[in-house]
Length: 165
Image 1 (tube, rainbow, N blue to C red):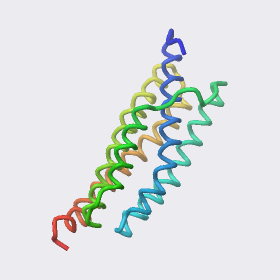
Image 2: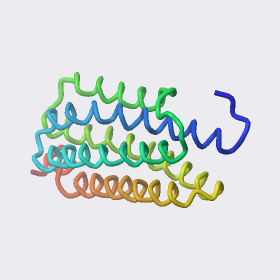
Image 3: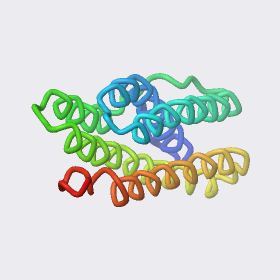
Image 4: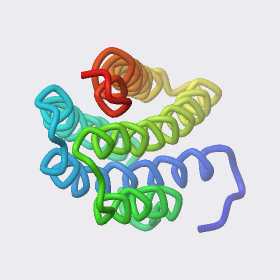
């Protein structure tokens, strides 16, 4: 795909995010299954439902642009998720595994926060207020998920991994 205009970049970045979200949808059930903390498992299950909504928003943007959603593979997310997959194969205490799962999930969230912030700004620059609004909704949800993960880590999971529970 030739990048000749800001809109070309916008579409390429949207496709990258679409690929990332689809990869995340496949990874979340595995992460939920590996979690021993009920709250963490529920959080992963809730985030899977939320991620389905993120995919739907991206599809709505592609439809409004008259562009296909496929065509780019998000290598960055593939790498982040591969690290998470390797983590699941570790011989770890349950509480330490939960702490590691949160760390892996936050890497995913931070990538998404950066990516959604970028495409939201591109939408704004291009005067596409509908896309900007949809992307902002997702960005807000990604930030909330990151905050929930931090709160769960600090109040429960990391405390248990440290031997405090």
